[in-house]
Picture 1 (cartoon, helix red, strand yellow):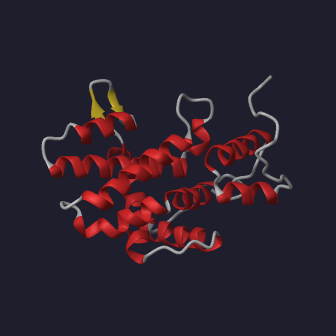
Picture 2 (tube, rainbow, N blue to C red; picture 1 turned 135 degrees about the horizontal axis):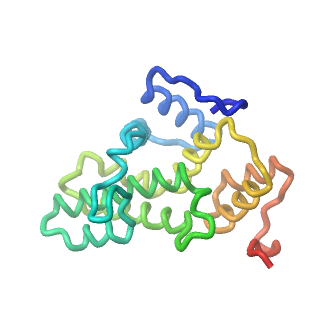
Length: 204
């Protein structure tokens, strides 16, 4: 979106995500391996199609809750299904936390839950997977830098959008829950110094 909230035409979605991710990681001074950034770019391109992000369930097309994805992994009857379930958990958690962090406000679970679940799934895969052994280093880096990749995707999502009072309040809440370096930087740019001793964000 540009400043006038008009749709910007993109001729190659994969290249758009590649350039945007590289720029976001660079602006946040985060080093990431080529294989890892390639994995994330492919993930963004894939999940930009709703039929890949959503699943068919008895309740219709929806995104399965992360807890149920974890249950699928724990109850899997073979290593392949377990690893695929964990990968799906990590991928969905990264995508949702990166692009929809502001939508979690006042919900039962918040962005910190997605970060914990996603990072944990990738971490477990990096240590145990044989089925997806070619991605072991990628999973390890995503587990270690999950917050930084979420911040990078937050930056891509926020590109071209302004801040209103509600956005700033939510930005502060995200920083308090996750310690996000990007959220802290954005708050300082707005003239707000993050402090753990500030007043509660809950309405009085």
